[in-house]
Image (tube, rainbow, N blue to C red; front, side):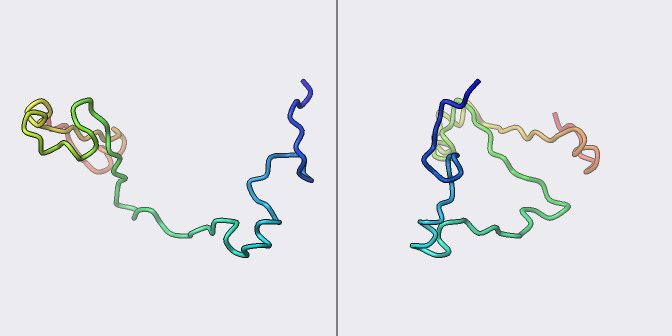
Length: 90
């Protein structure tokens, strides 16, 4: 199938980086790569889940909604739980 998109850029592709813009504002065109660890070896990522009762953290202190959803589950991957020696607390 022939490419139906023809770009006027020298590469013929959509460009996310422009040498013209970089020349106008040197150093602002390309995001710098940050070399840092997101977490330590013994730490876990916290990912907030969504429930139909609460809107982010804004409604957690509404008494009626707290009665509907009074507890939050923590999900841990089984392999991580074994490595950390966590047990099922049900």
